[in-house]
Image (cartoon, protein in one colour):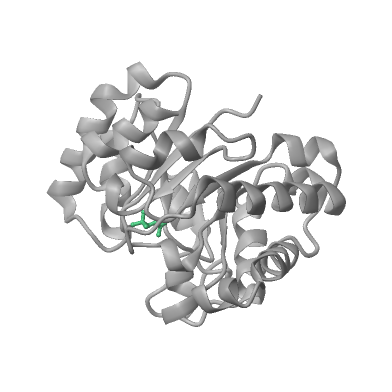
Length: 250
Ligand code: PGA
């Protein structure tokens, strides 16, 4: 049985004090959500202090990106061991905002995934199609390509640690979520693909999250589906009550 993962992606929101306050509010209620795993992904400047705030609570911490090199002259980037050093255990990789605005490619997603795994960070690998691709009936092709490339050269034991987030680009921050049927179709396809790449043991154990305008009102219908193992939540994760309401819905 896969434990559901409810992950908040705080993106470029929340200064230090605001991040700590939100983390405290989530931690205070975390005990009543024992059946789900809760994760928050603050911006880099808040990473260490949020990790400190959450110490001793069941709420985990993740970063929103990493560089694939260990260290070096890479202005503006941070490495896996800086993330670990800050107290985080997860890292989001290949978010569509990275792909759209910051030249993330399937190749860099693969490199970052390998580096994260080497550093014992749990990668949350994001995949998803644009609206034009969905309208052209390319959704399954696009998502399976992105998934296949993300796992290229990654051995089975490492793959088993990974989390995938299916995030249709047209649903992110738009208020327009995928219908449960649309999401389930893609999630089931991803699981089947992972089974083919590795085996059914890896596929059955892998958590596949849905992301894209998940909120308390639609969470239950999405999270009750067979292949949806949690959510990667942007907007609705910025307030403790909506984030916790999504956790309660699962
Ligand atoms: P959203 O963002 O919930 O605001 O649509 C999800 C994400 O980008 O991970």
